[in-house]
Length: 307
Length: 300
Image 1 (cartoon, rainbow over the protein chains, first blue to last red):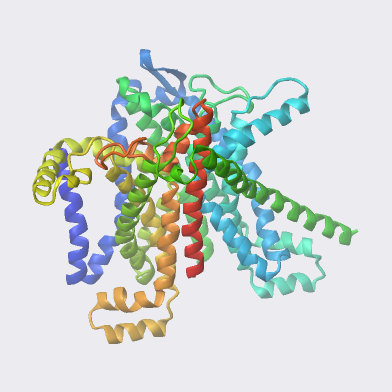
Image 2 (image 1 turned 90 degrees about the vertical axis):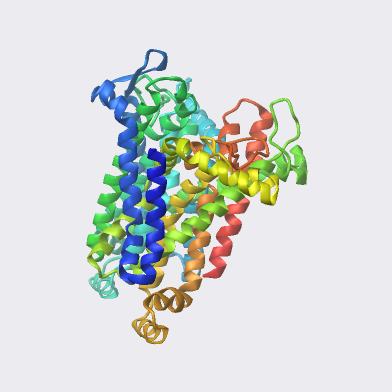
């Protein structure tokens, strides 16, 4: 019954967009313009509905306890939440200086003809399938990193699949995004300001720092966009994080789990247990809320700057 | 002193930028070197048609996965353009309206939204509604099959929980904001003179916006469509819970394979031959994505 109602309302919504366009054009366009809002709010409602059994059963404790014992129906999302925060924080810490360097190098040092090539290279990375990053992380980055740390320390301390591998892989993936936003802002520094900076005798490096301060809103905006990416990234992280569901990670060199990789790795066997699907939907609800808040902040910062 | 500091500082920026880009080149080179030798080993050209190898095989390919990827990407792109284009036009052409701000905010959030949530969303929608929709679909399928023949049942019929159409819907939801954002910026960049001319000659408003003005931005919109298609061709997370993956040529109403899903699965198995096939599949996928990407770049 519910399915028919759903199907009916979707069909009516889509038909009325195209019908209204023929009759009352502006209202048809407004209805089309609300697609994004409909999808986002639909997602929130569906996640809340699907997560409700778990929230009712475990309450708020689901988010503040560690543990993953499906046969006893004991779940806790704390390791995943902490894993998400750690990996994205480390990834951002690595990515921001790199992204700023890319933006500065493109705008200050490369000749104009190379600029477009470099820029479309950055766009290309944005279109690269994330699963290929995961493949590379699993077979190249992870072993190389573990070897490097183990020879540097002199004893066996690091495994290929760890929170650190995931963080570095994330940093590689999100750097181009942040760089694209920062570069866009950097190119918008008015010519007058640039001339003023050089006229007081600044060297190029000093000029770069002044300009970076001038576009700091773009840097923050890019940082938040990249943070949103890092927190939501699923497949690449799930391939290199190791999948440690129940224990709180004690260091970066241990295996861990993040909210979205927990969903990806545990979903195939979720149907066998009574509460696992609702618990995973609770994780999805958290991912969605995090995505909404962080991207909202990013977009607010960037909007404010543009106007 | 300041001179030296200047040189050192700028060199540091350049080195860091180089370090940031280096892994990306390495990924492409790594995928192609390992991927091409894997393809040659696993059967050369027949890699594109064979079913994936089991752990005991020494030949295999990505046939069903390639079909699934192309089918779902095509459907997703069509649906994504149908809905994303008007949305983008609204944001770009009517950007001074109050509601357009909300709409644009929504699109901007949706484009960065974690893709796994889209997959779960579609999974939930299908698991709620399939019971009611399936009898209807089976009726349609039987009616069509009696007219056109049995092959219709490979495309239309009672859907199982995991099917190609769920995958296509998830991909479409990811595609919509991409198309919308590019379309919006293209429409916003139309000069006022052109706009007035379009409204003057077109008569009805929808003709002005969708037919006359579209011609002015058709290149940018086509590039946007291609970029969005390249993006969804490589998506994995939304397909995990919607298409689920399959290693056989199966009807699209059942679980359907896709190349990214096979890479994700095979890379995590302990079998050499499947890992090799994952690399081969990655090379194929990267070729598809790069081809669409460069087609989009040449259009601009």
